Length: 260
Image (cartoon, rainbow, N blue to C red; front, side, top):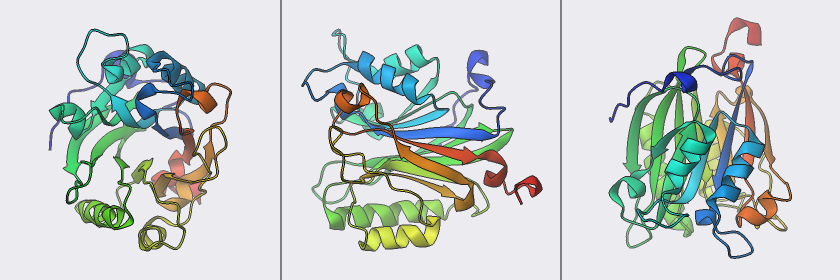
């Protein structure tokens, strides 16, 4: 486990954190390349600001070193949102053009990175982070699964083995682009047994979405109040995916008596 220091003071306390709900999003940003084939990290920042979340799980973040304006996107997102960035394996190792990342205003307590690569397929991974919500730890797992159905099932089961390493009482969020749309797939059947059946709004392709490739799962499932695709003029052209946004009831997340 890689521990990280406390968030800067300006990140540690915000009005939303003290509120009754927590807002999270999953967004495949396609390296910032929009439908106009133009790369614009600034446009992605604007979409993230529209979402107004406490935590973002991002996929396909281009973070290669360089002097050009669109390099090191993760650092730019963190700076312009005044949040803390947590890079995934491929960003840390610089083994690919893009990778997973979490950007959050919540204090980050710990970070683990899981390699979910399978066979000869494109390298994949998951970020396994604990953040502090209302003074308590919450586990957040952010991932991006592969394009092959067998590959996704292997990755799902590997991730579930990591899930069992912590107490089932620990509130857990799992979000990302899982690339699975077939409702009767083995992977989604197993997911429903673990996380219930939350809303799955269509978010791909962004200009006329009809596939649900991204997911937000929460345990306990009753804490998840809503999941919706964010449709705006900007989000429709900023990436080939729309972001999805989830709203979580904090009291239910910790099974507090007032949630009954």
